[in-house]
Image 1 (cartoon, rainbow, N blue to C red):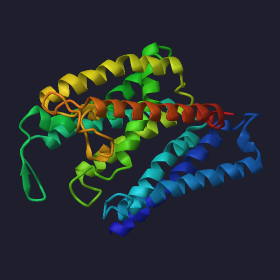
Image 2: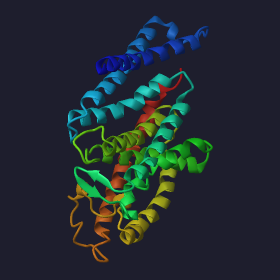
Image 3: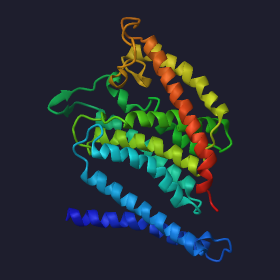
Image 4: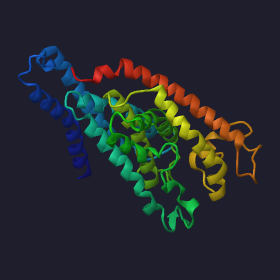
Length: 324
């Protein structure tokens, strides 16, 4: 029975891009500049839509069958990273000529917004993980239930950016946050396979974190390819004006006071290689100025690199996905 369902879902996912192509053809009937009237161009479109269908079906089957074991550089982990980078290009190509790009971006952003809202309900109360009872009784225990880290704050701001007036400076600043800091946060989370407690992908703490951070990467890249987002030095600088004092507030005040680690201002395993991160701790070992400076420099360098990459994509690749 399960195999029959898998086959049916795979066929539906494969057929979906072909159905979209049919809708595009119907929409373009009678237009003298219809690119689908050219037989060679039509063949290329059919091939590309079919490849996207294979990608959709293959992604479903990968997550359906390769979900265990789930660890760093496992088959599913590698495929998940590749699939995340392919998805915005596939979606941008499918919506080309349909005027549905903004609707798709809003739909994905709503999903991104809703998912972290499940965390307080899942994390609340005594939970059992691998036989150990964990009591979540204070604010610090809810740290990962509150989307305030540099990456998953995107769950709150992406949908805002899409609903605000397009020409607003706030909108522009948020959209530039998405393409650098948000995207970087998504990468940092998902290049690891540390999100949960069990060696199995379809466990809440694994899949919820991984999929949320995949959306954090997919949405801004999709928006860039569909001309819904413009890279701007000015708006990047706007972000620095609030990120810098906020980072200092979290690292010097809020985190040591409440015993949390928002924005990872205290050492984490993934960045334990940073030099002397533990040796210059202040205020009873709760504030790490050298570590914080190292993190800030890494993030700044990463954002500059991402800015250059996406500026190039905006100039050279985005025009290929715009309507003819």
